[in-house]
Image 1 (cartoon, rainbow, N blue to C red):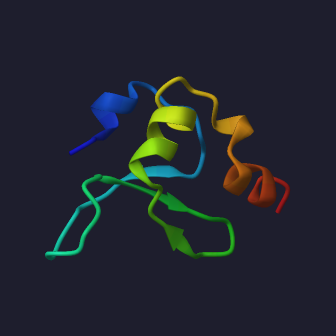
Image 2 (image 1 turned 120 degrees about the horizontal axis):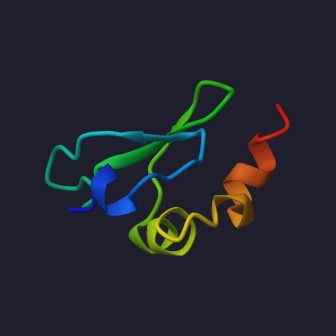
Length: 68
């Protein structure tokens, strides 16, 4: 399970620590709290691609919601 420690000091303003619950919960403990109030759980490969190397500004979700 990935945690905020795995992401180090991610600077994406939407990324938050979370909890994985239930049999179908993704194996991540991170979620995106978007400006419109929605919550989105990024896929594990998205966390590795955008959050861990701190390339969050290349994330399509970030690009879509950053200007709101």
